[in-house]
Amino acid sequence: MSWLASDAELALDAARRAGTLVMRWFRSDPVVRHKSPGQPVTEADLAADAMLRELLTASRPDYGWMSEETADHPDRLSRQRVWVVDPIDGTRSFIAGSPEFAISVGLALDGVPMLGVVLNPAAGEVYWAIRGAGAWRAPVSGGSAQPIRVRTSSAPRVLVASKTEIRRGELEPVLDALPAPREWNLLGLGSTAWKLACVAGGGADAFLSRGPKSEWDVCAGALLVEMAGGTVTDAAGRPFRFNRPHSSVNGVLATTGGSHDSLVSAVDAAGPLSRPVRPKS
Image 1 (cartoon, rainbow, N blue to C red):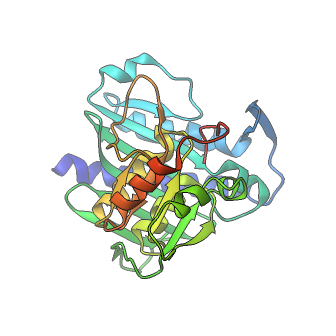
Image 2 (image 1 turned 135 degrees about the vertical axis):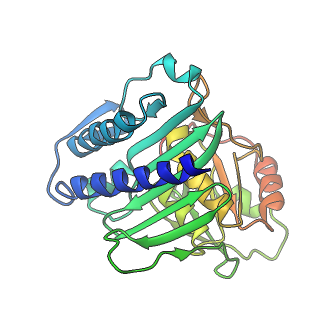
């Protein structure tokens, strides 16, 4: 699909430009306000959102647009192809000066993710995937470095998760419900999109969040995992569809594949969360 290769080039260029932009504010005390309790947004989020929207929609005016930092419009529901974007996924990490955030750009066709870009400018890495063509990693700067095709790996036996969810003990009932012996090591990491990239790139065996997330947190990274050979669903094991009227999804479970069914069963056995979790990474 020539249009898909062209869209991937466009998305990579836009993400790189947005990455350069947000680094102007990283560890530089950005202005922060709160959209709601526990939901911060910075001037960097808004600037990156404006840049990405201009670059992506100006070149593809017939595509729909869904972004965390843009007021939603029902017009997107009538579009066959829709950009699904989070200008900074992991805003709290960004504010704290932690390099655990990412620019996430996905493109869905009739609800199915067709391309995804997850770029972490602080870590200097960009991951991208094209449906049917695999998943890749390269330095953000590009240059003469050749992209490396990434594949999931079961070697680490590490489960990455939200630091908040780990602190609240929300993963322990799931691990306790798995058959003995317990083989998993928990690793707290910021940004849903970056955790998905970590699984796709072989740095972890699984990522689990039991709380609600938003489509823009998940769309690009979910394709990374799938194209790298892994499995990704909501926390109940259901496949994702994007560009729905309501953007919230029921958690995330991404694995290298072999452990997926057992983790879905363990989530079910653990029962509902004892307290609500806000739909953010």
